[in-house]
Length: 223
Length: 214
Image (cartoon, rainbow over all chains, first blue to last red; front, top):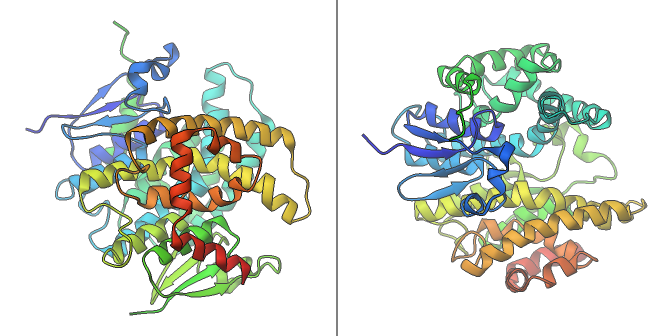
């Protein structure tokens, strides 16, 4: 059996969970290595060597050290192309082009407002930080416009890039999970017919359910 | 070969990103100007090409794409044997380049794009630059460039030893920022400065800028 790959960071991090979902879709064994962010471990010199921006996740396998969750997902999908979900990153250039387009749409249009909402509504209260109502309002308006585009697209296509579940859909799981399960903005997804149907399908996948379980597991005690 | 088309404005950073890739790959293409002032990017015809109503949109025969970084990836892979090599055939090297492509998109561009908006687009549209926003954005961009400075002491280009998409994607915002007060952020970091001088001197990039003058 291959040496498990290493993923550094807490599963509750949206970017970490993006990578975990991909590894599970591809049946790649992994070891989750805790990074104690409450103690600033991610900003210490040892960690900065593997992720110079001091963020999670970072990733290592026997041949390479990587960061940026979407880059890690692309690498894993290509390296393990022949195992697990073989359609995750497309099987020909046209499929890949469509996946890349919607993966960029996720990163550039969906992620900024949804991340801001996740931070304001799910994390700020836990961290006892004051919420910024202006940011919440602006982010909700931006996200609504993006979801209107998705509603139209998902009326024409079962998944974002085409008929198959791909990295483009997977990339949306982390932020949406928080918005739907712990905030009152979940309706933005569930009240749009096609987006709601799509969310149900992608979040119902075994791989994502396992990630959600990992997020619910109690954090490891510090040594 | 099918006709390649780019829809947009030669002043848009995202459009320039795609055109830079096309010129580097020495590919012929048709440029279709979209009249942003007239709201043409929100017309039904354009929304059929990009449902987000943003430029650029790209066509290669029947294939239609949007998102500049997806378009450049497509061009770099599909036309790998033309012009400048913009990706790495070696999968490990490509994985490293892929990291820095994401860094440009998620760490550098958010601040750089907002700075371009404050320093260039706002005045272009008759609005006033916000100096406090500029100061804040310059500080944030400076921190990213500190990481670039360290990276470029170990690697000739951001993505690795060869020039690639990771470097190219920076050119449009760089072009605007170098003509502004933000230039000091690049000049004050020796390896970043050398890298900027190198990539902005490329003949293909000069062709992109020339489009703004015609």
